[in-house]
Length: 384
Image (cartoon, rainbow, N blue to C red; front, top):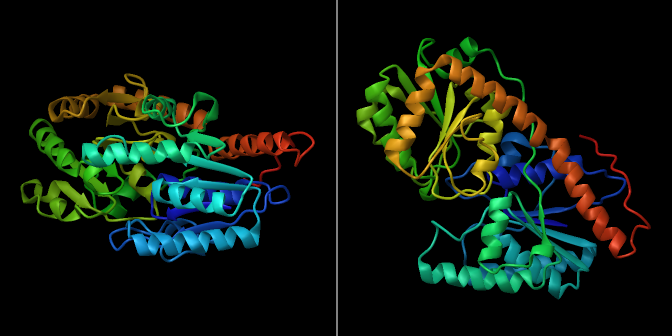
C-alpha cells in the first residue's frame, strides 16, 4: 500500500506513478492512496498519468489541520486493516507521518518511507525545524527501511539524527521523457523567436524554489545577453510575483503547467534552478534526457544530477554567480552543445525509469525474503 499526501506535478508523483506502472503485477498487488492537490497546483494524474488508479482520502492533503489529519489517520488505518498489506510505503512528509502511524495501528509488518528531499532547511523557523526533526526521529524508530533519493539527502538526515545508516537505501529518481518536436516547431508552438537564446525554469513557483532569485538572475543576464528569453513552466502561490515583473517585458514567458514538458525542453538552450533546498530535482533529470545543460544552486542532491563543469554549472545561492554561469553557457555554443550531450548520456544511464523500478523491486524482494514471504528474491518481470 503506497501513501502520498497529494499527486501534484513534481518528482514524488512522477516516481510513484512510475512504480505503480512498472512493478510486476504478478508479484506485487499495489494500491495507491492520496489526497487532492491544492488550488495553486496541477494534478499529475490528470495531466500525465490518467492510467494510474488512486484511492482518494479527501483529508490527506498538504495543509495540516488536526481534525482532518485524525480523520485521514482513521481512514488509512481502516484501509490497511481491510487490504492487509505486507508493506506500507509512504512518500512526502505528511503522508509519511500519518501513513506510518496508521501502519503501526494496523499492525502492518513492514514500513518503508521515501525522503524525496527534506524539511531541514529553508521551510520553517528554527523552532519548527527542531519539531520536524524530533518527529522524524520518532517515525524512523518505527520504520524498517528509509529510502533517500540521493546520498547528500541521506547524509543530511543522518547528521540530524534521523534513522541509522543501516536503515537507509539510496534510490535515485527514474523517469522517461517523450520525444519532443524539433527546435523550430517547439519555439513556434510556444511563441518564441527562432533566433533567441532561451533559459527555462521548470517547477513549482513557491518560496523554497526562489522565483525572486530567478527574476534577479534574468535581469542580470538580459543586460549581458539582450537576446535571452526566459520560460517559466509551472505555477504556484508566488506566480503573481512573476506576472508583476514588468521590467522584463517580452523576455519573460509564463507558460503555467504543461503536460508536454518535452516541448519546453526542445525549445530551450539551458535550464536554470535557483532553489534554496532540493532533494534530487526531476526537472534537471528531464532536461538532461533532452540534452539540455543546467545552471543550478548546489543544494541537496543537485550535484548528483548536474556534474559541475561537465553537464552544467553549479553555484551557491548567489545571484551574481548564477548569472555569470548562465551568461557563460549562453555565449558559448560549443560549450552548450558539449554539456548538453554529456547530460543526455549521464541521465539516460543513471536515471531511467527501468532502473528505478529494478531498485525498488530489489528492495521489496529483500524485505520479502527476510520475512520468509518469498523463499529467495525473485527476478523482476517489470512491464516498463
